Amino acid sequence: MKRRDFIRKTAVSMGAAWLGGRTLSEAIWALPSLPHKFQATDTVTLGKTGIQTSRLAMGTGTVGFGGRSNQTQLGLKGLSGLLLNGYDHGLRFFDAADAYGSHPHVAEALKHIPRDKVVVLTKTWARDAKTARADLDRFRRELGIDYIDICLMHCLSEGDWTERFRGVMDVFSEAKEKGTIRAHGCSCHTIQALRAAAKSSWVEVDLARINPIGSHMDADPPTVVSVLREMKASGKAVIGMKILGQGDLKNRQDEAIRYALSLGVLDAFTIGAESKTEQEDLIQRIAKAA
Image (cartoon, rainbow, N blue to C red; front, side, top):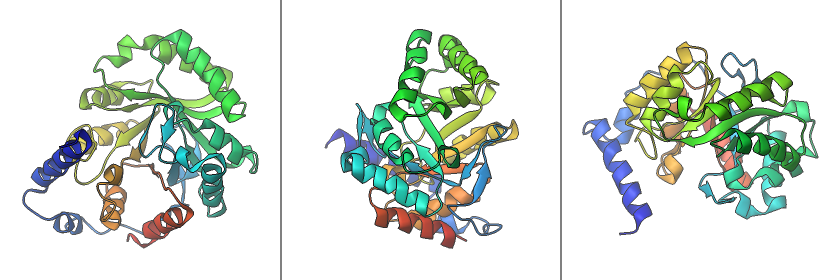
């Protein structure tokens, strides 16, 4: 069995254990009704940052590493055109990362729209101050912008990361004071790192993996949601990712989207479409979720 297939089947098995013998549909429809209708284009405020953007962010790295992703394989014009299509449909949130190689594609899209009308989020793998400082300068050059709205420490796994990588955090804090970034935070890939992020006053924005079957997540959904509630209560911006389980829920999109909206802890969430048709379908599905 291929490693990716093994991981996927393991994730589905974990989700089944959490569902307690119920089918996914039974578990989803057991949730309370959504309090109101949602739109992908709703203007939301990200925690206490004051940053306002659309509820749905346009992901550029559904499977992204090594400077490539599903989305960047669309090519410069392909991905920038997809971002502009989203903009034309009311989306205002670009989710990029150095690891995805998507900065040039975002930069191309930004040439055609007002800079102050979109929020640009990106991520760095820097684990020391020197690299973090160089990355922030390089990222702004690659994106063709003077400031980055949100910059995150990418893919943290260490439970003591807030102590181990203090140098990076200090660089980000300094950059915020200078106005080269507007907010800082992290994405986590273990429950220990996620819990550390919840306790840290430095974290303003957290990009968290969440879906109803626990696919590609830091722990089972109830455990993760409890940590996200702690974050939300302290005023952090919580942005959901892996909403569709990196494809494991591609045939159950409506249920997965409704689950994300029902939690009451996500300020926004990011999903990476790979075509204009898929992107517009996501927008329609969110509108019909209630």
